[in-house]
Image 1 (cartoon, one colour):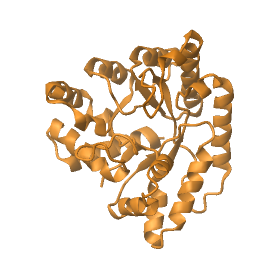
Image 2: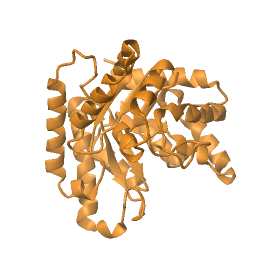
Image 3: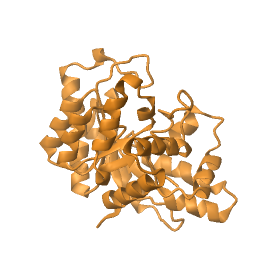
Image 4: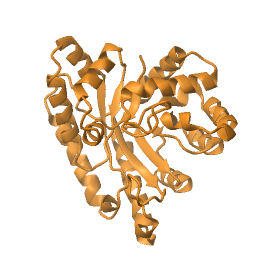
Length: 298
């Protein structure tokens, strides 16, 4: 079964109330799901997200399935570049560090992995769509806000560097600013998640040592862009390649427009594997090795 390096379980349940969380987690366990990373976006959401998993897993009546779920779930902690947090960057990162410390102090006798294994997601977003889910408006980004957004990102890169943890980077319509922050901090350990740039930008990240993660968005590629996408998917070295859902967003074809869950990650694997002319199982093995090297190598 496949792994998912990026999803938002709490948001999945909030935005799709009819979704049965224990059914999703149980189905993944039954399919021998190897690894799932629940991603943080707010300074103080880590403990809430872990509590939610505790609550949902406690409802799974099959003990062996529940144990499998506890063993495949891991957590990151980070701050997405919301304007509110951008304007309070230092205070927000202090709150984030406190959450990380509190989670580490929790007893782990239930085997839920409470110690985070990554910082993020964090980064730069200059995609302007005030009516969209992110509510991004260029009018909100004066010179001070632009500078503070980079500060918020740099502070989290520095935190990852200090803790020796990978950083999950969100970068949309902000390649140069993202690269500038990475170079300023001088830390090159982590993932450019939900990759949305071209081959030359990928080269810049890979040359620095970053992993590239593809989501269901790649399955939306138009015929006119298919050649470029195929080149991009083949360019990323096999030891720097990851796959994700970003659930509940970006459900892969043929489920585009519907709520996404980690169960659907196999469609992204199938698409990427076909582009690289390998079997999905082979791609799964490559991704799982990269997960071990990035998150668990000593």
